[in-house]
Length: 403
Image 1 (cartoon, rainbow, N blue to C red):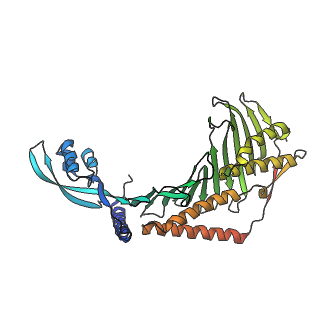
Image 2 (tube, rainbow, N blue to C red):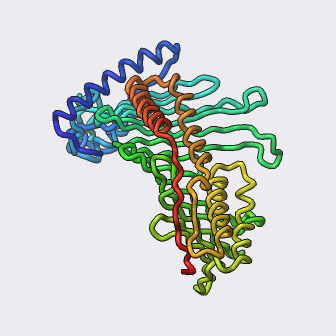
Image 3 (cartoon, helix red, strand yellow):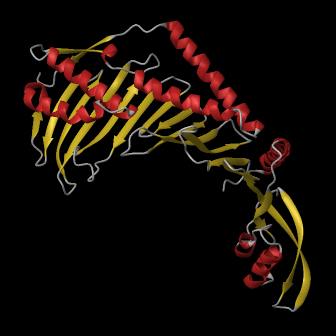
């Protein structure tokens, strides 16, 4: 746990207690009930003066109200507590009975907010961190074909926050009845990290640059596809491509790599397309149309997929191959940024933002809502600026690796 100075601790505890009061008002408006547990305990007598069995007996005496193991095992200060209570227990080492212990607690959790559709949980920490989660337990039906669960976290001392969402949906495919999407959004300072299934987008809000990563592991059970894929792209604020690469590895039945197809596009080094055999032999794909066609065939399952990651990788590889094919007889290969379709990346980001907006209205934490609103305002302003600037596509003059 991060050690805060005394002034920061005072501010953190004050703000956390304010959030707790507002959250309590919100939960009561739901007509919901819950039970409270105090954790991260600190009490020097529990550490130095009595045995573990007495501590456990005290826990049982108060049922689930307190977690005291932390106080028994550690003498370290927890800083300014969120709560302080007097507990009564025995000390079998000295024979004392009904001895009073003043215990400080650095964390308070709320449990038991259950309905027939979901269950909710709060966790308040004296370091300023507040967590809230909702787990959906409603049964998926044709009338209600989807359900949303999520975990959220933020700290009262910063504008940072984390949200992870799981979306379960019924499908029309009898072979795969349920579909699961996993979305996360994390803001730390000026760095925004968004994930949508296998797509990871890291955005620097101060510069507008984005790093897009997609990784697909080889699945031995999928007999129709023996390839694994690693994709990476750096995108400018106007969505133009600064650098991109995709590596497609074919695998044997035992999982060992059989060969690697690699495509690289950059402003500095141009377009490079190579095949690397298992023994390390390098073949330039710009001079070998047959192997180039094989790489394209490997990507066909992804191209036919509805998965956004598959589409992004396929678009990049196809655009690169088309640029190579059009310019095989030229010394300089032109790669136009407009050939690289950014729509699927933008759609993945939009999907994440829409899901965050979807849960925003039911969040019971004022501080978290404020941080989400500030974030949405910043993103909205940047998108408006980009639209206003227009998108003049620049053609990159990229040298063939033959030269």
